[in-house]
Image 1 (cartoon, one colour):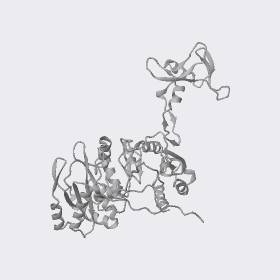
Image 2 (cartoon, one colour; image 1 turned 45 degrees about the horizontal axis):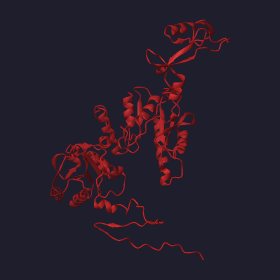
Image 3 (cartoon, helix red, strand yellow; image 1 turned 120 degrees about the vertical axis):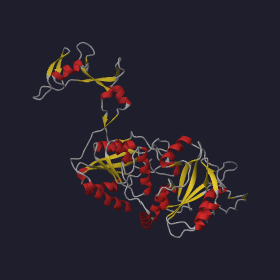
Image 4 (cartoon, helix red, strand yellow; image 1 turned 180 degrees about the vertical axis):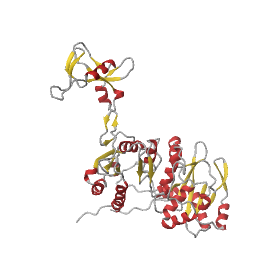
Length: 487
């Protein structure tokens, strides 16, 4: 219900700001689409509804093995509304499927290798506005085209008579046909997976072809495209590639950071080709962000050191680690540095020691502590006591402390070449490195005998063997699970 209330307020504003020539596309899933359609009908009016588009977003799921008792859910819904009858509409086409193409365009031109088909040229006649009747290649009929048009087609070799006396037919090349008009079932778009070239590791990322299709259908070059939930910026990139102006909005600093890096890879420069509003530019802005939303402050601070939030930035216990910096240690190895963010005034050396402890547990050689306020001398001493380590072919401090003010002025931690969310996804696809062997701490956190071993006499329940490193202790005595006979 909270989601619907939040969406209603925003949809009212989107309707207000939308031009009469504009359209709205709302992506949702099957759990909310029916509610959202009622809301949109109330705001735009039922007459403004154009389509419920079904988009195949993923390949087949095998959820039944996880206990699901429903058909696989592999589609999402896109609700399409227009502001008025003046809304821009550009008809789109998709390629013919091979069965249709091979049946209708079954001939191949010897000289060019182009596929073509032969189609009917005749039309109904006799009525006041009937098709004209005249002779073509010795055959008199009512034809679909005028005498002048037929003469031009004969000169161009577009009229074919397969044998003397047969009715001439029109020659159409497959590569000149626009294809089939796009319908409301979109199952021809690529699926984003971990192996996809465009995958960024962003949870709700959509294929750029999906956004290109939407933008092409309902806007023209030079028009303005607004994505009020821009996420990783797919709609922004698609709009830019198609020559549209664009505005992207998101409530998370993480999303804005991903969009900025994505635009940078397209050669766009901040404050020249685009500008970002709403993120802190100085200490005062950082303090206001921390006071208003400590979690968003944490996510924003992580982006300042080119890191990525742990567990996707979800709120909850982080065990002292707020983010991770992925860096290239050597040609074949990607390693990680741990990030801890402290926005409060009460900071002390314990925070440095906690970070060092987490580094030891996770076998991370480097760590960064980001603070809003100036660190104490004891904190700096604790960081120095952690010593140095070699990373990326260079000796670097194991623990580095940076204030927000230092980071905003460009004083970043000393790191090997860093992988942001975009380059990390590409490197992961390229390297496919085997995982590290688990540490003792990893083993303690895992359930006993994660992978069951079959053998011996089969029992209804196989007991786990607790692991209390370094010794393997004997199994705990089991309770009597025999069922009592009913009286």
